[in-house]
Image (cartoon, rainbow, N blue to C red; front, side):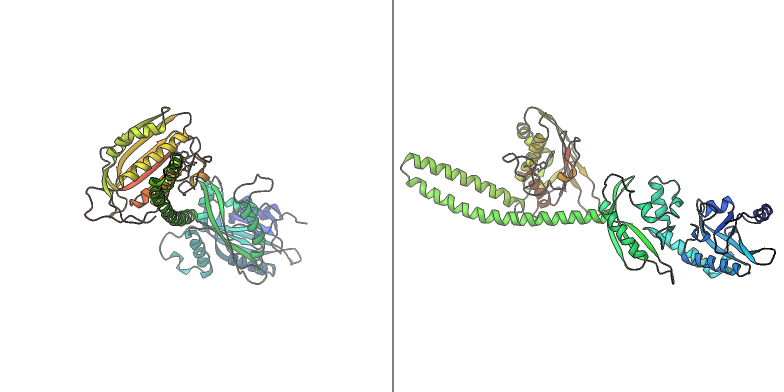
Length: 512
Ligand SMILES: Nc1ncnc2c1ncn2[C@@H]1O[C@H](COP(=O)(O)OP(=O)(O)O)[C@@H](O)[C@H]1O
Ligand SMILES: [Mg+2]
Protein backbone atom coordinates (compact mmCIF):
# COMPACT_ATOMS: atom_id res chain seq x y z
CA UNK A 1 0.00 0.00 0.00
CA UNK A 2 1.47 3.34 -1.03
CA UNK A 3 0.73 6.04 1.56
CA UNK A 4 0.83 9.75 0.77
CA UNK A 5 3.47 11.98 2.28
CA UNK A 6 2.49 14.55 4.94
CA UNK A 7 1.36 17.87 3.50
CA UNK A 8 4.17 19.94 5.00
CA UNK A 9 6.88 17.62 3.59
CA UNK A 10 5.72 18.34 0.08
CA UNK A 11 5.65 22.06 0.89
CA UNK A 12 9.28 21.95 2.02
CA UNK A 13 10.25 20.05 -1.11
CA UNK A 14 8.30 22.46 -3.32
CA UNK A 15 10.17 25.39 -1.79
CA UNK A 16 13.53 23.93 -2.82
CA UNK A 17 13.04 21.75 -5.90
CA UNK A 18 11.39 22.15 -9.30
CA UNK A 19 10.84 18.40 -9.50
CA UNK A 20 10.27 16.37 -6.38
CA UNK A 21 8.82 13.10 -5.23
CA UNK A 22 8.82 10.45 -2.54
CA UNK A 23 9.53 6.85 -3.54
CA UNK A 24 9.50 3.42 -1.95
CA UNK A 25 12.91 1.96 -1.19
CA UNK A 26 12.76 0.19 -4.56
CA UNK A 27 12.03 3.43 -6.47
CA UNK A 28 8.27 3.21 -6.96
CA UNK A 29 6.56 6.61 -6.84
CA UNK A 30 4.41 7.26 -3.74
CA UNK A 31 3.90 10.93 -4.39
CA UNK A 32 5.31 13.36 -6.94
CA UNK A 33 4.59 16.86 -8.11
CA UNK A 34 3.03 17.44 -11.55
CA UNK A 35 6.25 18.95 -12.92
CA UNK A 36 8.15 15.71 -12.23
CA UNK A 37 5.45 13.48 -13.70
CA UNK A 38 5.08 15.62 -16.85
CA UNK A 39 8.81 16.07 -17.48
CA UNK A 40 9.57 12.41 -16.83
CA UNK A 41 6.57 11.20 -18.90
CA UNK A 42 5.24 9.14 -15.96
CA UNK A 43 1.60 8.40 -15.24
CA UNK A 44 1.55 9.01 -11.46
CA UNK A 45 1.87 7.13 -8.15
CA UNK A 46 2.76 3.49 -8.71
CA UNK A 47 5.08 4.24 -11.67
CA UNK A 48 8.80 3.59 -11.35
CA UNK A 49 11.21 6.51 -11.40
CA UNK A 50 13.71 4.41 -13.40
CA UNK A 51 11.13 4.31 -16.25
CA UNK A 52 11.22 8.10 -16.56
CA UNK A 53 11.66 9.02 -20.22
CA UNK A 54 14.30 11.58 -19.37
CA UNK A 55 17.15 9.14 -18.58
CA UNK A 56 18.50 9.25 -22.07
CA UNK A 57 20.98 6.48 -21.66
CA UNK A 58 21.61 3.43 -19.60
CA UNK A 59 24.54 5.04 -17.73
CA UNK A 60 22.24 7.77 -16.39
CA UNK A 61 19.74 5.17 -15.25
CA UNK A 62 22.47 3.19 -13.56
CA UNK A 63 23.60 6.30 -11.68
CA UNK A 64 20.04 6.87 -10.50
CA UNK A 65 19.73 3.26 -9.34
CA UNK A 66 23.00 3.59 -7.40
CA UNK A 67 21.64 6.79 -5.77
CA UNK A 68 18.40 5.07 -4.77
CA UNK A 69 20.30 2.07 -3.34
CA UNK A 70 22.62 4.33 -1.40
CA UNK A 71 19.71 6.36 0.02
CA UNK A 72 17.91 3.16 0.98
CA UNK A 73 21.01 2.28 3.03
CA UNK A 74 20.74 5.65 4.79
CA UNK A 75 23.10 7.97 2.86
CA UNK A 76 22.24 11.26 1.26
CA UNK A 77 23.72 12.15 -2.10
CA UNK A 78 23.68 14.83 -4.78
CA UNK A 79 24.86 14.79 -8.36
CA UNK A 80 24.32 16.44 -11.71
CA UNK A 81 22.85 14.78 -14.78
CA UNK A 82 22.07 15.86 -18.33
CA UNK A 83 18.51 14.80 -19.12
CA UNK A 84 16.06 15.32 -21.94
CA UNK A 85 13.06 17.43 -20.96
CA UNK A 86 10.06 17.46 -23.30
CA UNK A 87 9.78 20.88 -25.02
CA UNK A 88 13.15 21.99 -23.60
CA UNK A 89 15.62 19.49 -25.06
CA UNK A 90 18.75 18.60 -23.09
CA UNK A 91 18.93 20.22 -19.64
CA UNK A 92 21.33 19.79 -16.74
CA UNK A 93 19.68 18.89 -13.45
CA UNK A 94 21.03 19.03 -9.94
CA UNK A 95 19.62 15.89 -8.32
CA UNK A 96 19.40 15.14 -4.59
CA UNK A 97 18.27 11.80 -3.13
CA UNK A 98 17.99 11.12 0.57
CA UNK A 99 16.46 8.70 3.09
CA UNK A 100 13.17 9.45 4.93
CA UNK A 101 13.09 7.74 8.34
CA UNK A 102 10.18 6.66 10.55
CA UNK A 103 10.09 7.55 14.27
CA UNK A 104 12.02 4.41 15.13
CA UNK A 105 14.84 5.46 12.80
CA UNK A 106 14.24 2.97 10.03
CA UNK A 107 14.53 4.18 6.42
CA UNK A 108 11.00 3.77 5.01
CA UNK A 109 10.91 6.10 2.00
CA UNK A 110 13.28 7.92 -0.34
CA UNK A 111 13.00 11.67 -1.05
CA UNK A 112 13.94 12.88 -4.50
CA UNK A 113 14.42 16.48 -5.59
CA UNK A 114 15.84 18.05 -8.74
CA UNK A 115 16.38 21.61 -9.96
CA UNK A 116 17.33 22.76 -13.42
CA UNK A 117 20.75 24.38 -13.57
CA UNK A 118 21.19 27.54 -15.61
CA UNK A 119 22.89 26.71 -18.93
CA UNK A 120 26.62 27.59 -18.81
CA UNK A 121 26.96 31.14 -20.15
CA UNK A 122 30.72 31.63 -20.25
CA UNK A 123 33.60 29.53 -21.46
CA UNK A 124 35.26 27.36 -18.87
CA UNK A 125 32.13 27.08 -16.72
CA UNK A 126 31.78 23.44 -17.48
CA UNK A 127 35.44 22.62 -17.03
CA UNK A 128 35.01 21.37 -13.50
CA UNK A 129 31.92 19.29 -14.23
CA UNK A 130 31.97 15.62 -13.38
CA UNK A 131 33.05 13.54 -16.38
CA UNK A 132 29.99 11.20 -16.54
CA UNK A 133 27.64 14.18 -17.04
CA UNK A 134 29.75 15.59 -19.86
CA UNK A 135 29.97 12.15 -21.43
CA UNK A 136 26.19 11.66 -21.46
CA UNK A 137 25.69 15.10 -22.98
CA UNK A 138 28.30 14.35 -25.62
CA UNK A 139 26.64 11.04 -26.46
CA UNK A 140 23.32 12.84 -26.84
CA UNK A 141 24.95 15.46 -29.07
CA UNK A 142 26.46 12.71 -31.28
CA UNK A 143 23.06 11.03 -31.58
CA UNK A 144 21.47 14.35 -32.47
CA UNK A 145 24.07 15.02 -35.17
CA UNK A 146 23.27 11.75 -37.02
CA UNK A 147 21.14 12.10 -40.16
CA UNK A 148 19.46 8.74 -39.45
CA UNK A 149 16.43 8.56 -37.17
CA UNK A 150 17.61 6.76 -34.05
CA UNK A 151 15.66 5.26 -31.16
CA UNK A 152 17.14 3.59 -28.08
CA UNK A 153 15.01 0.84 -26.62
CA UNK A 154 15.14 -0.83 -23.23
CA UNK A 155 14.86 -4.59 -22.83
CA UNK A 156 11.06 -4.51 -23.14
CA UNK A 157 11.20 -2.55 -26.41
CA UNK A 158 10.17 0.71 -24.72
CA UNK A 159 11.58 3.81 -26.41
CA UNK A 160 13.86 5.49 -23.86
CA UNK A 161 15.41 8.07 -26.17
CA UNK A 162 15.09 9.37 -29.71
CA UNK A 163 17.46 11.70 -31.54
CA UNK A 164 16.91 15.05 -33.21
CA UNK A 165 16.43 13.54 -36.72
CA UNK A 166 13.65 11.32 -35.33
CA UNK A 167 11.97 14.30 -33.63
CA UNK A 168 12.20 16.44 -36.79
CA UNK A 169 10.76 13.64 -38.94
CA UNK A 170 7.90 13.09 -36.46
CA UNK A 171 7.17 16.84 -36.33
CA UNK A 172 7.21 17.01 -40.16
CA UNK A 173 4.58 14.27 -40.23
CA UNK A 174 2.13 15.84 -37.87
CA UNK A 175 3.27 14.51 -34.45
CA UNK A 176 2.93 17.62 -32.31
CA UNK A 177 4.91 16.40 -29.32
CA UNK A 178 7.75 14.13 -30.51
CA UNK A 179 8.57 13.38 -26.85
CA UNK A 180 5.25 11.52 -26.81
CA UNK A 181 7.17 8.54 -28.20
CA UNK A 182 9.23 8.23 -25.04
CA UNK A 183 7.86 5.49 -22.84
CA UNK A 184 5.90 3.89 -25.71
CA UNK A 185 6.69 0.44 -27.03
CA UNK A 186 8.63 0.69 -30.30
CA UNK A 187 6.48 -1.79 -32.21
CA UNK A 188 3.25 -0.12 -31.11
CA UNK A 189 4.59 3.34 -31.98
CA UNK A 190 5.98 2.46 -35.42
CA UNK A 191 3.80 -0.31 -36.80
CA UNK A 192 0.22 -0.10 -38.04
CA UNK A 193 -2.18 -1.31 -35.36
CA UNK A 194 -4.18 -4.51 -35.91
CA UNK A 195 -7.33 -4.13 -37.93
CA UNK A 196 -6.03 -1.29 -40.10
CA UNK A 197 -6.44 -1.94 -43.83
CA UNK A 198 -3.44 -3.62 -45.51
CA UNK A 199 -0.93 -1.06 -46.68
CA UNK A 200 2.53 -1.06 -48.29
CA UNK A 201 5.10 -2.10 -45.71
CA UNK A 202 2.87 -4.63 -43.90
CA UNK A 203 5.08 -7.49 -45.01
CA UNK A 204 8.18 -5.74 -43.64
CA UNK A 205 6.33 -4.85 -40.42
CA UNK A 206 5.74 -8.55 -39.78
CA UNK A 207 9.45 -9.29 -40.30
CA UNK A 208 10.48 -6.44 -37.98
CA UNK A 209 8.02 -7.54 -35.30
CA UNK A 210 9.48 -11.06 -35.45
CA UNK A 211 13.12 -9.95 -35.34
CA UNK A 212 13.01 -7.21 -32.71
CA UNK A 213 12.35 -9.40 -29.64
CA UNK A 214 15.37 -11.51 -30.67
CA UNK A 215 17.51 -8.38 -30.97
CA UNK A 216 16.38 -7.20 -27.52
CA UNK A 217 17.50 -10.45 -25.92
CA UNK A 218 20.78 -10.41 -27.86
CA UNK A 219 19.91 -13.68 -29.62
CA UNK A 220 20.14 -11.88 -32.99
CA UNK A 221 23.10 -9.56 -33.51
CA UNK A 222 21.93 -7.61 -36.50
CA UNK A 223 18.70 -7.09 -38.39
CA UNK A 224 18.20 -4.93 -41.43
CA UNK A 225 15.26 -4.42 -43.74
CA UNK A 226 14.05 -1.79 -46.23
CA UNK A 227 10.47 -0.66 -45.82
CA UNK A 228 8.18 1.88 -47.50
CA UNK A 229 6.82 4.67 -45.34
CA UNK A 230 4.07 7.14 -46.24
CA UNK A 231 5.16 10.68 -45.38
CA UNK A 232 3.76 14.16 -45.87
CA UNK A 233 5.99 14.36 -49.01
CA UNK A 234 4.75 11.06 -50.47
CA UNK A 235 6.10 7.54 -50.06
CA UNK A 236 9.73 7.21 -49.00
CA UNK A 237 11.88 4.14 -48.35
CA UNK A 238 13.82 3.63 -45.15
CA UNK A 239 16.48 1.08 -44.21
CA UNK A 240 15.95 -0.14 -40.67
CA UNK A 241 19.02 -1.43 -38.85
CA UNK A 242 18.63 -2.85 -35.37
CA UNK A 243 21.42 -4.05 -33.08
CA UNK A 244 21.44 -5.12 -29.45
CA UNK A 245 22.83 -2.54 -27.05
CA UNK A 246 25.11 -4.25 -24.51
CA UNK A 247 23.98 -2.64 -21.28
CA UNK A 248 25.73 -4.78 -18.72
CA UNK A 249 24.65 -7.88 -16.81
CA UNK A 250 20.94 -8.53 -16.84
CA UNK A 251 20.14 -5.55 -19.05
CA UNK A 252 19.14 -5.85 -22.68
CA UNK A 253 18.06 -3.17 -25.08
CA UNK A 254 18.55 -2.14 -28.68
CA UNK A 255 19.43 0.72 -30.92
CA UNK A 256 17.19 1.08 -33.98
CA UNK A 257 18.37 3.24 -36.85
CA UNK A 258 16.23 4.38 -39.81
CA UNK A 259 18.08 5.72 -42.84
CA UNK A 260 16.27 7.35 -45.78
CA UNK A 261 17.33 5.28 -48.83
CA UNK A 262 14.73 6.60 -51.30
CA UNK A 263 17.34 8.13 -53.64
CA UNK A 264 19.51 4.96 -53.63
CA UNK A 265 16.51 2.82 -54.49
CA UNK A 266 15.50 5.10 -57.37
CA UNK A 267 19.04 5.02 -58.77
CA UNK A 268 19.24 1.22 -58.44
CA UNK A 269 15.86 0.87 -60.13
CA UNK A 270 16.97 3.13 -63.03
CA UNK A 271 20.19 1.11 -63.38
CA UNK A 272 18.29 -2.20 -63.41
CA UNK A 273 15.94 -0.78 -66.04
CA UNK A 274 18.88 0.38 -68.19
CA UNK A 275 20.56 -3.03 -67.96
CA UNK A 276 17.32 -4.74 -68.94
CA UNK A 277 16.90 -2.42 -71.91
CA UNK A 278 20.45 -3.03 -72.99
CA UNK A 279 20.05 -6.81 -72.74
CA UNK A 280 16.78 -6.80 -74.68
CA UNK A 281 18.29 -4.40 -77.23
CA UNK A 282 21.30 -6.66 -77.86
CA UNK A 283 19.15 -9.76 -78.12
CA UNK A 284 16.77 -8.04 -80.52
CA UNK A 285 19.47 -6.71 -82.81
CA UNK A 286 21.30 -10.06 -82.82
CA UNK A 287 18.14 -11.92 -83.84
CA UNK A 288 17.15 -9.26 -86.35
CA UNK A 289 20.57 -9.45 -87.97
CA UNK A 290 20.44 -13.24 -88.49
CA UNK A 291 16.81 -13.08 -89.54
CA UNK A 292 17.62 -10.39 -92.09
CA UNK A 293 20.42 -12.50 -93.60
CA UNK A 294 17.92 -15.33 -94.19
CA UNK A 295 15.42 -12.92 -95.73
CA UNK A 296 18.12 -11.54 -98.05
CA UNK A 297 18.66 -15.10 -99.36
CA UNK A 298 14.90 -15.63 -99.81
CA UNK A 299 14.47 -12.27 -101.60
CA UNK A 300 17.51 -12.89 -103.83
CA UNK A 301 16.23 -16.40 -104.72
CA UNK A 302 12.75 -15.08 -105.53
CA UNK A 303 14.17 -12.31 -107.71
CA UNK A 304 16.11 -14.92 -109.72
CA UNK A 305 13.15 -17.26 -109.85
CA UNK A 306 10.45 -14.82 -110.93
CA UNK A 307 11.64 -14.10 -114.52
CA UNK A 308 11.69 -17.86 -115.14
CA UNK A 309 8.05 -18.32 -114.16
CA UNK A 310 5.93 -18.37 -117.30
CA UNK A 311 2.59 -19.16 -115.74
CA UNK A 312 0.75 -15.98 -114.58
CA UNK A 313 -0.70 -17.48 -111.37
CA UNK A 314 2.70 -18.71 -110.24
CA UNK A 315 4.21 -15.27 -110.93
CA UNK A 316 1.43 -13.55 -108.91
CA UNK A 317 2.00 -15.98 -106.03
CA UNK A 318 5.78 -15.45 -106.12
CA UNK A 319 5.17 -11.66 -106.19
CA UNK A 320 3.14 -11.93 -102.95
CA UNK A 321 5.86 -14.02 -101.31
CA UNK A 322 8.47 -11.45 -102.37
CA UNK A 323 6.37 -8.55 -100.96
CA UNK A 324 5.97 -10.41 -97.64
CA UNK A 325 9.72 -11.13 -97.47
CA UNK A 326 10.44 -7.44 -98.14
CA UNK A 327 8.07 -6.42 -95.32
CA UNK A 328 9.89 -8.85 -93.06
CA UNK A 329 13.19 -7.33 -94.10
CA UNK A 330 11.90 -3.79 -93.38
CA UNK A 331 10.79 -4.94 -89.90
CA UNK A 332 14.20 -6.50 -89.27
CA UNK A 333 15.78 -3.19 -90.32
CA UNK A 334 13.60 -1.33 -87.76
CA UNK A 335 14.67 -3.73 -85.04
CA UNK A 336 18.31 -3.33 -86.00
CA UNK A 337 18.00 0.43 -85.74
CA UNK A 338 16.96 0.09 -82.08
CA UNK A 339 20.52 -0.78 -81.16
CA UNK A 340 22.54 0.04 -84.23
CA UNK A 341 26.26 0.01 -83.75
CA UNK A 342 27.73 0.87 -87.12
CA UNK A 343 29.00 4.41 -87.76
CA UNK A 344 26.54 6.65 -89.54
CA UNK A 345 26.83 10.04 -91.07
CA UNK A 346 24.78 12.29 -88.82
CA UNK A 347 23.41 15.58 -90.09
CA UNK A 348 22.89 18.97 -88.58
CA UNK A 349 19.12 19.36 -88.31
CA UNK A 350 17.24 22.49 -87.25
CA UNK A 351 14.54 21.02 -84.99
CA UNK A 352 11.97 23.73 -85.69
CA UNK A 353 12.40 23.23 -89.43
CA UNK A 354 12.14 19.45 -89.09
CA UNK A 355 8.92 19.73 -87.06
CA UNK A 356 7.39 22.23 -89.50
CA UNK A 357 8.15 19.91 -92.45
CA UNK A 358 6.70 16.89 -90.60
CA UNK A 359 3.60 18.71 -89.33
CA UNK A 360 1.42 17.78 -92.32
CA UNK A 361 2.31 14.11 -92.05
CA UNK A 362 1.74 14.17 -88.29
CA UNK A 363 -1.71 15.74 -88.78
CA UNK A 364 -2.60 12.92 -91.20
CA UNK A 365 -1.39 10.37 -88.65
CA UNK A 366 -3.49 11.73 -85.77
CA UNK A 367 -6.65 12.19 -87.86
CA UNK A 368 -9.25 14.94 -87.84
CA UNK A 369 -10.33 14.73 -84.18
CA UNK A 370 -6.92 15.69 -82.81
CA UNK A 371 -5.63 19.22 -83.34
CA UNK A 372 -1.90 19.92 -83.43
CA UNK A 373 -0.49 23.07 -81.82
CA UNK A 374 3.17 24.08 -82.12
CA UNK A 375 5.13 26.36 -79.81
CA UNK A 376 8.57 26.48 -81.38
CA UNK A 377 11.11 28.74 -79.72
CA UNK A 378 13.33 30.56 -82.23
CA UNK A 379 16.18 29.91 -79.78
CA UNK A 380 15.86 26.10 -80.04
CA UNK A 381 18.60 25.60 -82.65
CA UNK A 382 20.10 22.52 -84.29
CA UNK A 383 21.01 18.98 -83.31
CA UNK A 384 23.23 16.31 -84.84
CA UNK A 385 20.96 13.37 -85.70
CA UNK A 386 19.81 10.98 -88.37
CA UNK A 387 16.91 13.04 -89.83
CA UNK A 388 14.87 9.94 -90.70
CA UNK A 389 15.11 8.72 -87.12
CA UNK A 390 13.94 12.10 -85.79
CA UNK A 391 10.96 12.01 -88.16
CA UNK A 392 10.15 8.41 -87.12
CA UNK A 393 10.35 9.37 -83.43
CA UNK A 394 7.90 12.27 -83.93
CA UNK A 395 5.57 9.99 -85.87
CA UNK A 396 5.69 7.29 -83.17
CA UNK A 397 4.82 9.88 -80.51
CA UNK A 398 1.97 11.29 -82.60
CA UNK A 399 0.51 7.82 -83.19
CA UNK A 400 0.68 7.04 -79.46
CA UNK A 401 -1.05 10.36 -78.70
CA UNK A 402 -3.79 9.53 -81.20
CA UNK A 403 -4.32 6.10 -79.59
CA UNK A 404 -4.54 7.78 -76.15
CA UNK A 405 -7.19 10.26 -77.38
CA UNK A 406 -9.88 8.13 -79.09
CA UNK A 407 -12.42 10.91 -78.49
CA UNK A 408 -10.08 13.59 -79.84
CA UNK A 409 -7.96 16.18 -78.06
CA UNK A 410 -4.85 18.26 -78.54
CA UNK A 411 -1.28 17.41 -79.38
CA UNK A 412 1.28 20.10 -78.51
CA UNK A 413 4.77 20.13 -79.94
CA UNK A 414 7.17 22.52 -78.21
CA UNK A 415 10.85 23.25 -78.60
CA UNK A 416 13.26 25.31 -76.54
CA UNK A 417 16.93 25.55 -75.55
CA UNK A 418 18.06 24.52 -72.09
CA UNK A 419 21.24 25.76 -70.47
CA UNK A 420 23.90 23.22 -69.58
CA UNK A 421 23.56 21.94 -66.02
CA UNK A 422 27.24 20.93 -65.76
CA UNK A 423 29.91 23.61 -66.34
CA UNK A 424 31.48 21.66 -69.25
CA UNK A 425 28.19 20.22 -70.51
CA UNK A 426 26.56 21.03 -73.85
CA UNK A 427 23.39 23.09 -74.05
CA UNK A 428 20.36 20.94 -74.75
CA UNK A 429 17.67 21.31 -77.39
CA UNK A 430 14.41 20.17 -75.83
CA UNK A 431 11.49 18.77 -77.78
CA UNK A 432 8.29 18.08 -75.84
CA UNK A 433 5.32 16.21 -77.23
CA UNK A 434 2.28 16.56 -75.02
CA UNK A 435 -1.20 15.11 -75.35
CA UNK A 436 -4.47 15.53 -73.47
CA UNK A 437 -5.16 11.79 -73.55
CA UNK A 438 -5.92 9.12 -70.99
CA UNK A 439 -2.40 9.06 -69.54
CA UNK A 440 -1.02 5.95 -67.90
CA UNK A 441 -0.53 4.42 -64.45
CA UNK A 442 2.97 4.15 -62.88
CA UNK A 443 3.30 0.41 -63.62
CA UNK A 444 2.83 1.04 -67.37
CA UNK A 445 5.11 4.10 -67.27
CA UNK A 446 7.88 2.01 -65.71
CA UNK A 447 7.97 -0.24 -68.80
CA UNK A 448 7.06 1.96 -71.79
CA UNK A 449 10.60 2.21 -73.19
CA UNK A 450 11.03 -1.58 -73.18
CA UNK A 451 11.04 -3.04 -76.69
CA UNK A 452 7.84 -5.08 -77.30
CA UNK A 453 6.01 -3.67 -74.27
CA UNK A 454 2.50 -2.77 -75.35
CA UNK A 455 -0.90 -2.49 -73.71
CA UNK A 456 -2.63 -2.45 -77.09
CA UNK A 457 -4.37 -5.54 -78.41
CA UNK A 458 -2.84 -7.93 -80.98
CA UNK A 459 -2.42 -6.23 -84.34
CA UNK A 460 -2.76 -2.76 -82.78
CA UNK A 461 0.53 -2.29 -80.97
CA UNK A 462 4.06 -3.60 -81.53
CA UNK A 463 5.65 -2.07 -78.45
CA UNK A 464 8.43 -0.63 -80.59
CA UNK A 465 7.34 3.04 -80.77
CA UNK A 466 8.80 4.36 -77.53
CA UNK A 467 11.73 1.94 -77.72
CA UNK A 468 12.65 3.67 -81.01
CA UNK A 469 12.23 7.12 -79.40
CA UNK A 470 14.46 6.08 -76.50
CA UNK A 471 17.04 4.41 -78.77
CA UNK A 472 17.13 7.44 -81.09
CA UNK A 473 17.61 9.88 -78.19
CA UNK A 474 20.37 7.79 -76.58
CA UNK A 475 22.15 7.17 -79.89
CA UNK A 476 22.13 10.92 -80.53
CA UNK A 477 23.80 11.60 -77.19
CA UNK A 478 20.58 12.71 -75.51
CA UNK A 479 17.75 11.29 -73.42
CA UNK A 480 14.01 10.68 -73.45
CA UNK A 481 11.72 11.11 -70.44
CA UNK A 482 8.05 10.51 -69.95
CA UNK A 483 5.65 12.14 -67.50
CA UNK A 484 2.09 10.91 -67.19
CA UNK A 485 -0.73 10.05 -64.82
CA UNK A 486 -4.13 8.43 -65.46
CA UNK A 487 -6.51 11.06 -66.82
CA UNK A 488 -3.78 13.72 -66.88
CA UNK A 489 -2.36 13.27 -70.39
CA UNK A 490 1.22 12.41 -71.28
CA UNK A 491 4.32 14.48 -71.96
CA UNK A 492 7.37 12.99 -73.64
CA UNK A 493 10.52 15.11 -73.42
CA UNK A 494 13.47 14.50 -75.71
CA UNK A 495 16.72 16.29 -74.86
CA UNK A 496 19.49 16.41 -77.49
CA UNK A 497 22.86 18.16 -77.31
CA UNK A 498 22.87 21.46 -79.18
CA UNK A 499 25.27 21.74 -82.17
CA UNK A 500 26.11 24.71 -84.40
CA UNK A 501 28.14 22.99 -87.09
CA UNK A 502 28.46 19.80 -89.09
CA UNK A 503 31.10 17.37 -87.71
CA UNK A 504 34.36 17.11 -89.69
CA UNK A 505 34.46 13.29 -89.47
CA UNK A 506 31.60 10.76 -89.31
CA UNK A 507 30.29 10.40 -85.77
CA UNK A 508 30.05 6.93 -84.26
CA UNK A 509 26.62 6.24 -82.87
CA UNK A 510 26.36 5.43 -79.22
CA UNK A 511 25.56 1.84 -78.34
CA UNK A 512 22.14 1.47 -76.68
N1 LIG B 1 0.77 9.14 -75.21
C1 LIG B 1 0.47 8.04 -74.51
N2 LIG B 1 -0.59 8.02 -73.66
C2 LIG B 1 -0.89 6.92 -72.97
N3 LIG B 1 -0.20 5.76 -73.03
C3 LIG B 1 0.87 5.70 -73.83
C4 LIG B 1 1.26 6.83 -74.62
N4 LIG B 1 2.37 6.49 -75.32
C5 LIG B 1 2.64 5.21 -75.00
N5 LIG B 1 1.74 4.73 -74.13
C6 LIG B 1 1.74 3.39 -73.53
O1 LIG B 1 3.02 2.81 -73.75
C7 LIG B 1 2.90 1.58 -74.44
C8 LIG B 1 4.11 1.40 -75.33
O2 LIG B 1 4.10 2.35 -76.39
P1 LIG B 1 4.86 2.04 -77.70
O3 LIG B 1 6.26 1.65 -77.37
O4 LIG B 1 4.70 3.18 -78.65
O5 LIG B 1 4.16 0.75 -78.24
P2 LIG B 1 2.69 0.58 -78.89
O6 LIG B 1 2.18 1.95 -79.22
O7 LIG B 1 2.92 -0.26 -80.09
O8 LIG B 1 1.88 -0.12 -77.85
C9 LIG B 1 1.57 1.68 -75.14
O9 LIG B 1 1.03 0.40 -75.39
C10 LIG B 1 0.74 2.47 -74.16
O10 LIG B 1 0.23 1.65 -73.14
MG1 LIG C 1 3.31 3.28 -80.25
